[in-house]
Length: 204
Image (cartoon, rainbow, N blue to C red; front, side, top):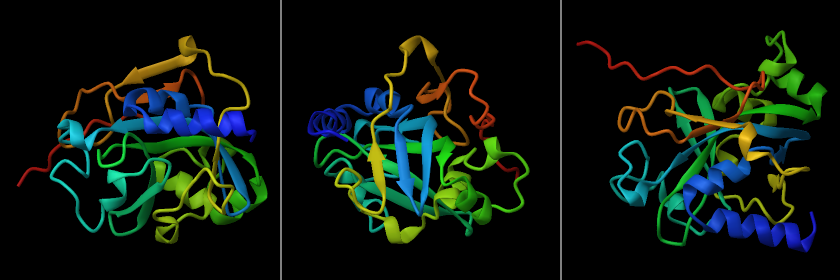
């Protein structure tokens, strides 16, 4: 990654969360000997009154990294079994982040398969936020990692610019608030994009 590319990526992440999310499509995330090309993301703007965001009620021990600076990894544990990863965006002090929902394994296929031996199709290796982290070998140890300094968890811009016409947008998946905010973005027709499931409250 050149200095100019690094500057452009840092500038993208330091800006508003919606364009940052769109700009991350096609970017490459590397960790644990595996590289994934991002094909689906979701934007969350906690400081902007987004009730679906982990930062909606202010900083906590879990979400503190979301309040900046941008370019760091926010990982959280869900359902007592899965890790999910976000890229922190926006100005320092204003919580926002982009959830990495799905990707295509473009390097380190053998390592990704070894981490997910039950998966039959390669397109399913990182198809979903928990699967993506599993394929990359990511867990809570990566919390707070800076992604633009060439470290063990590394984010790089797309090899080629993504045509805006090739990007679809729709409601976010499984959130309990702001269900229909169209802040999930994906590469149209890509087979690694996860299935949409609207959140359905449990009946008591």
